Length: 115
Image (cartoon, rainbow, N blue to C red; front, top):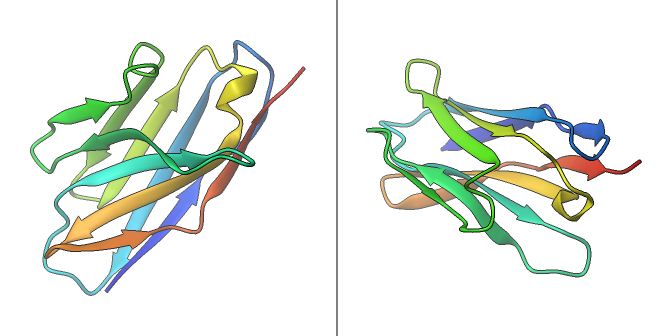
C-alpha cells in the first residue's frame, strides 16, 4: 500500500509561482512512475506531468513551458514547480504513483490563481 500526501497548494496571484510536494509512505517495494494531475470545477481530471524513477518526464503540451516536475527517490517525493501561473490553472492538483502495476492517488491540494 502507498499513501500519498500532497502539500504546497494555496492562493496566488497571476504570474506567481507555487511548488507542490507529494510524499509517499507505506509498505511498498518500489514506486515507479509518479505524476501530477489536476481537476478544475466542472471538468475532467487531466494530466499535468509524470516522471519515471529514472527521471524521464512527460508533460501536457500546454504546460511544459511553465511547469517542471522532479522527484527525490531517496525521499519517495515528487515535486511540481509551477511558474507564471494563470487563472485557468486553478484546480485541485492530485498526486499519483504507480507501484507493482497498482495506482494510488493523494487527496489533492487546491491551487487558486486569482487577483
